[in-house]
Length: 115
Image: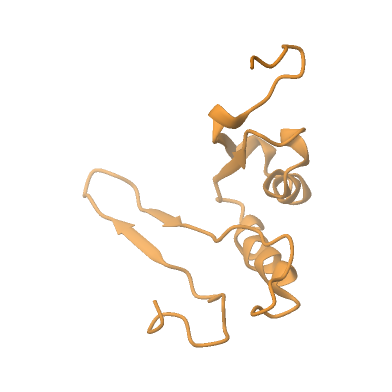
């Protein structure tokens, strides 16, 4: 990993591109964006949250972007996740597939916890 990410850089702005080619299929470019950073860690630059948002915004602004937003299921309100906030800010709701991760950790307060 050290040869891919220079020391002290933490985030690369160049995309990791995956090309899938087949004559009978239209061209499709998949870009896996990094997670949105919520707080900086001591060894990371102080502006890491803004940098990750800027990278995401750069792709979300395109008309032909389809978003796969991965959201942890154990948060209180899924619609308040940072990923979905970016989707809403870029008006991509109609072009977004939302995936819940860690659904086994989700909690429903309507049910009593078993001990």
